[in-house]
Amino acid sequence: MIPERAKALLLPVAALVMLEIWARAIDLQSDSLAPPSAIAAALVGAFADGSVLIATRDTLVSAFTGLLIGGAVGLAFGIALGIFHVFDRLMEVTIESIRPIPSIALLPIALIALGFGYRMEILIVAFACIWPILILSRAAVGGIEPRLIEVSRALRLSPLDRVRKIIVPAALPRIFLAFRLAAGIALIVAVTVEIAINPIGLGAAIMTAQQALRPDLMLAYLVWIGVVGYLLNTGLVVAQRHLFGRAALVGDAA
Image (cartoon, rainbow, N blue to C red; front, side, top):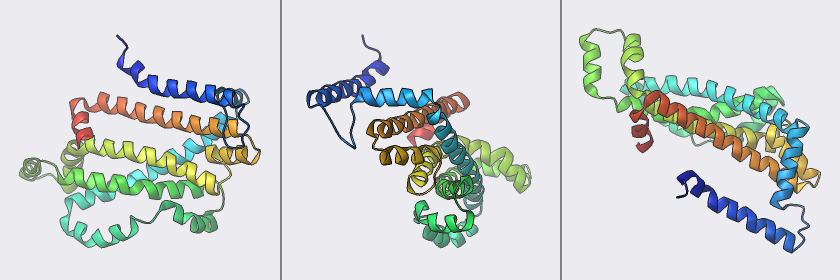
């Protein structure tokens, strides 16, 4: 019997083999495509000279810092909106007017204000990460069992203690799910900013390889970004199941 995880690899491995055979059969010469073996060799070379590690560090620094800043802002507002319904109604139009703005549309403003580098990229990533955490944490707080709130009132807990001891623990599995979603968004936005304008990180490395007419290296960086995203999500899934057990499954179903 083939393990389930091995079965999941059958299709991509078969696709890679077919692509390799096709590329060799037609003696592929292209500025945008390369055989899988050439892509793998380019990725190994990028690891050998350390360029992929430096680019990965730059991208992850921006992505994680923006995620933490945006996550903190989104979580604070999400909890406040979930608790205070009057505040939620007052902020509804403002939030729904700002939320649809693409984070990349802030590039001209951020570039003028902060210039190239980490700060500009972190600002844009943070803006993108605010909204999924805000929306999902607001829904998580609003979905808390009303009897828990009644208990907190019966115990005469202060608003801060109510949030710290009742609301956050009850909503934490879904809040962590929102954090998982925002982590993927942070990586996507960071790479997009680097491709568009910021000369650091994995996105800039893709553009440099493209300008050097190195499709094998360009595609190697794309593959590596996919690997980084997969590892990030897998790590967060493992942490979610370890921290919350069966409650994590409820969060995923929601």
